[in-house]
Image (tube, rainbow, N blue to C red; front, side):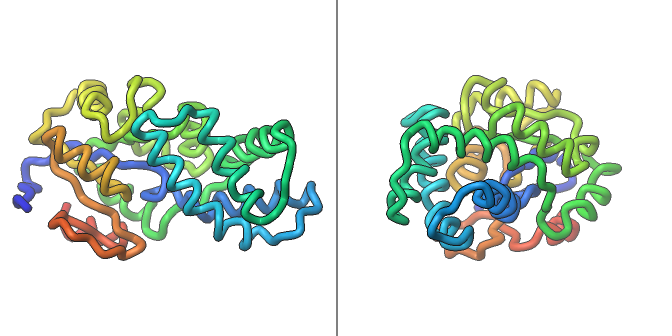
Length: 232
């Protein structure tokens, strides 16, 4: 692991979901609202226990273009319904998927320390977002959680044409930000998409390891966002 020369950094690129925006907490609220309209024989907690790993599994496939956006949205839900012994017509699953996408950005739970960190960093750095999320949904998340104004540029995979960890999305993000590799750091929760993708592209990276998972490789990591204040 090479040292990061923090003194030369001018541009910080943040992932959004699972890094600043608490996807799992907001997801739970959205499903609560949706499931109130149906008489399913399971609780939201029982659903989420199965949904969270399935969603992560399919997102990893989506990131490397092994499934489409439509397949991601359908399979992550349909798999869970089948596991919970609820067999639904495809049209119903599609309707619930649409409701989920509609309701999800209406919530604005952020990870602890997000606003304090952004307030601290904004006068010192140019802040940016690099996300694999869908453009309209991600924009609503930023607006509704009242953090969009902190960021100079917002790169999403739909605009870039590729998804993290593909090097072209980082190239797109740095070009949009008018930043050099040496001046930049990527900060995110995914070892594959955020950290490995950035490092292979040639920019430094910090792993937001909020779940405190065991990491074999030597990477800069934090368990709480406010730890960044001690580095930057």
